[in-house]
Length: 423
Ligand SMILES: [Ca+2]
Image 1: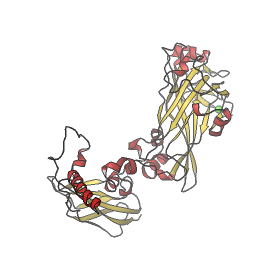
Image 2 (image 1 turned 60 degrees about the vertical axis):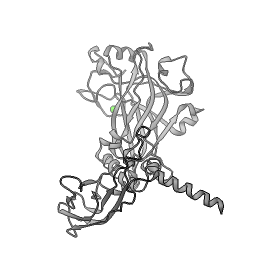
Image 3 (image 1 turned 90 degrees about the vertical axis):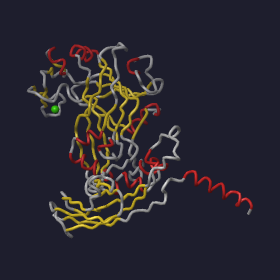
Image 4 (image 1 turned 90 degrees about the horizontal axis):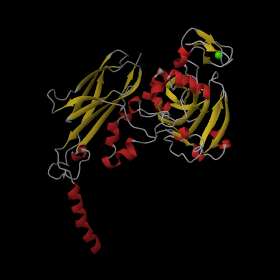
């Protein structure tokens, strides 16, 4: 018993030291209602909030305004210590799936292992794993593990779209604003001699980075494939290590998604319903820009493609030196050392609309008018906040310059109501 009596005073001292000023502020009362009872798309819905809160925010429950996907929900359910690790950033992908996919080729021992994760298409040969430090110094600039295995393969015919396919099975969570899908392709492109000469004369090192993304919709079970360019790869012009530069290596698949309304809508509103199931990477897409009056069937599939320069159909190279700057094809060796697709964390991103505060000139707005542009069932959520005064006396700013929000004590309450909007 004596031990307990000794410990209790110590515990009380501990609590007193951490206590926030005004910690006994009361949670506000909030209740929400709306009119008309059964609104249609285009009708003005009037939401009325009854509250004694100092600050008020409303979530209308439709696209980008869902409380359940909001940062404020994450804050309400966590303290600042656990906010980032346990709540704000977390993996919401279905079991067995992830939000990121990556492979270091240093971790592969055999080509048979590589072939479990990668499939090659087009005019590709000489696929091998190796350490290339002494043989191709330009291929090692800024490579993370220069003394470890890289994948190397050769594009043998610039007329034929070529590359590799992998199946990441990932989800892009967080909405466009948070740039999910930031990715790294640690690649080095070393042109064959003819390409190198043409690239040098044309002063153009860029190889368009084309991708096919196949998205699997796990509601409809439908697969949809989208084709597009996402930035460039770069090829080396010379063997001179000083003039050679590696490709930037950063690609953002949320930009790719944003270019297609189908993918963009899911990325922003229901990312959990759509899986990036298959990625086809073209390391050689077209011999020149996909524009113009010169028509050839270079890849021999029976369909003519149009090119922006006159080409030699037997080689796929521009005939005239004036067109060398239009050359966008690639023939030569590709080195691949690291591949990462996606971010690994979910961040809440939906936003509410501030209805003001009792401290602002206009005060709190307790009546909110809104027009739904889509039919469906939505959850309207009003969040009221009461904030204590700042505990200035007890904060040592010479030592602590952390999040100042933590210097205030806040209490929040919410009220939810379901609204059915008809057509
Ligand atoms: Ca063709």
